[in-house]
Amino acid sequence: MRCWTGDTPADYLASWRIGLAQGLLRAERPLEHVATEVGYGRPSALTRAFVRRVALTTEMVKTQGRPSPAVLDTFFSAGFAERDVLYIVLAIAVKTLSNYSNHAFATAVDDVIAGYKVA
View 1 (tube, one colour):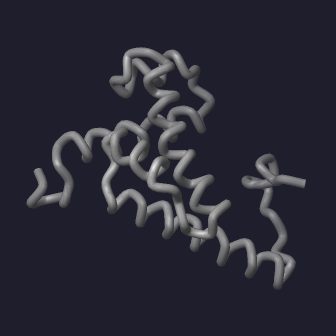
View 2 (cartoon, one colour; view 1 turned 135 degrees about the vertical axis):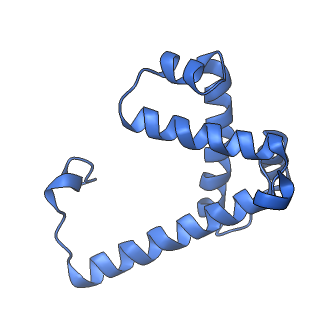
């Protein structure tokens, strides 16, 4: 597996499960069903995996890219890899660029996205 994806099977599975769960939750599927469908078994296990991922994202934003060793250790112990940290950095960068350009040019929010608009 590592020769194709760069991940161990466990790392790949963890990333795949979280990604799949995110899509199902965005589609407003119940947490209990999503946890079972993606292989976590219990909502609490899926919630812990999400919290570990979100904790790093929040820490990266709050500290301007200087996460504490404890937050990183928690993230890695959840089965994520350095590559996943870089994905978070990329997502933050893309979101920042998007926000700045939308603010600079007063981009209108289209109807599909309007329901998610934050006042």
